[in-house]
Image (tube, rainbow, N blue to C red; front, side):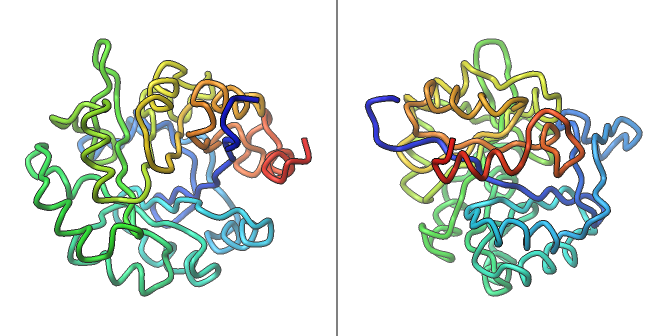
Amino acid sequence: MSSTTRRSLFRPCIDLHDGKVKQIVGGTLSDSDPATLKTNFVASQSPGDFARLYKEKGLEGGHLIKLGPGNDEAARQALETWPGGLQIGGGITDKNALSWLELGASKVIVTSYLFPEMKFSLERLRLLSTLVGKERLVVDVSCRRRGDRWMVAMNKWQDITDMEVRQETLNLLSEHCSEFLIHAADVEGLCQGIDEELVAKLGQWVRIPTTYAGGAKDISDLDLVERLSDGKVDLTYGSALDIFGGTLVKFDDLVARNAGER
């Protein structure tokens, strides 16, 4: 156990695409060429079914992500099933953020709105933070590796912005939000392991609750994230998880791990 008393936890997710719960290889999402999309799993259960499962297991702080259009009704269903239990992201702006909170989201998650013309706007961040309140705002700094740097990616991780994920930018963002969500888009959905270097850096840099997603393939990855980040970063599992058609990680084992039973 590290010197901190905090443990890295499993944080659940619901990814919506065309109104269904799916697990997608993050780097294959494309508006210009839908044929490139690689889908690992399409659920027969509804978004509400997953929200109900997370509620029953007491898994708070999960993220509900709308990947493109046609997902609003599915998102509403999940929020109605567990009001106050899920954060929502995907197309969040100053025009709709409050309405999603009113529909039951615990927090709103924002990326693309903060990067008009792919350039970071502190003005927009301040506006949204003032509008919904810092405590109800999550900034998604999902990123793609460019050389030895990680650059924030927007628009379903297709477009690289001018913001590098590093100490100074995370310090600035954390003045206006209460949490970070960070998908490592290059390894998202591949089940080939987490970006260990990024997780270790996040452990050095972050000052607010942070959830990492991308590549988790074994329950031991949760202990690895805890060790690398000194317990400062939580972990989301996707395609490896049995409730999403995976064979590598059992959902019930993660629930038990969160409860300190293993």
